[in-house]
Image (cartoon, each protein chain N blue to C red):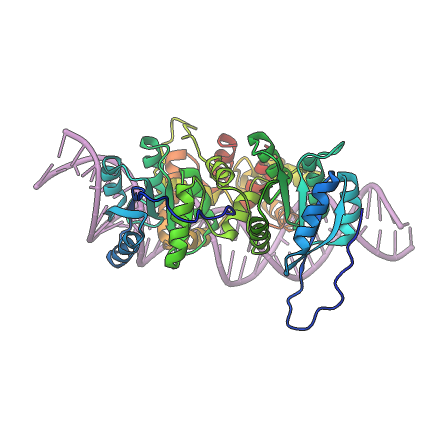
Amino acid sequence: MKIEPLQPANPAPVAPRLKVVLVEDKPDLRDSWSRLINSFSDFVCVGTCVSGEEALRTIPTLRPDVVLMDIFLPRMSGIECTTRLREVLPKLPIVMLTGVEDNELVFMALQAGADGFLLKHTKPADLHLALLEVRRGGAPMTSEIARRVVESFRRPARPSEPGVHLSVREEEVLILLSKGYSNKEIAEQLSLSVDTVGSHLKHIYEKMHVRSRAEAVARYMAANA
Amino acid sequence: MKIEPLQPANPAPVAPRLKVVLVEDKPDLRDSWSRLINSFSDFVCVGTCVSGEEALRTIPTLRPDVVLMDIFLPRMSGIECTTRLREVLPKLPIVMLTGVEDNELVFMALQAGADGFLLKHTKPADLHLALLEVRRGGAPMTSEIARRVVESFRRPARPSEPGVHLSVREEEVLILLSKGYSNKEIAEQLSLSVDTVGSHLKHIYEKMHVRSRAEAVARYMAANA
DNA sequence: GGGAGCCTCACCTATTTGGGGGATGGGAAA
DNA sequence: TTTCCCATCCCCCAAATAGGTGAGGCTCCC
């Protein structure tokens, strides 16, 4: 592993360059990407790792602002490495580098804690855009991946309990209720008056045959796990 | 959630303008947005709806390529309308228009089938970018929302929170609590005074960092699913 | 156009809850 | 021994909640 020297105290007006660490086992890719990153005036590659093991050792001490992680690494995969890094650095943005947009791998990486995806044949300008997107707190990825991620939230219509037919509004209230919100907080979330929330709750209780919010939450969580 | 380059220019023979339908109850917003859309050379606003009900009637016949949907509509919310539209037109891209980035609403909209989000005070250029992103099969949204969506995929990875060590008695109370019992009922079940139950609850809340029984139940049910 | 169902809001009251003090004893740990 | 935690119980009080009644407005359906 090679640590690039930090640039010696840039003149005042320059914003500090964001520190990037690259985890990539192939030497040629490692070199070309780190060079590319250093060519950006607002980012600097402060280190490269050839393996997941090395990444776990060095990244916590390097404290980078972003990690670029190859999804395929020998022995410990980039996904496994991401999982372990997450345990130590929950807030560290990790962007996966992938050759192809494999559906399974993408979602495994997301579960592991990845914040974005970059194709390996990404053009320099797009790499820069992705890094900027990360800096803004975003999640850089291709359109296709983004759409698939969003679609994975689709609720295929849920029959749940056949007996209780709650109206849409009532269900919204129930969802917020089951997150532990008070009537006042629910009212704020839905832009309603507290009395209206109370009114919905009365109907919910009646339909669910319960007598308290805790009971409603218990039933809802049990049926809808 | 966008990173790929914008395609430079349309090929010579003008591509057909993509049809957009706008669902928005406020007349002034409706007018200005539809005018804005029509000002783009590659998009055309083929219809506007003042309500979710109208949207459900007209959109299936208009067959637009994109729908811009106000998330807050009178009577039928944009979320509800999205749910119903999805049943009829599963592939139709629906972009929600929202005033603020309300966490709850965003996720409810995603579950309902939304493909993206636009803030109402979006600049014309950004609206155009969003429409282009939709056309490319992407999911336009702000960086913050994208990150939150991605983070929601995180696997808890921890079996239960080790931080909360409840005593045996406290756990018993919590179990009964999560069945929806009131303090009085819990006291009867455990042959205690109501005050003792209340005392246990205070400690439980403190240890779990919650402020209500509903919140405690929600947490307990979520952790022990 | 009438009725059913929702959504919204209001006002009322009784009860429950949340949270703040305590006190007492017992057992475990230091 | 002293100190801690646990379990039990008590009082108090502000806030939240449960439940009732009612009412206006809006859709949808017949």
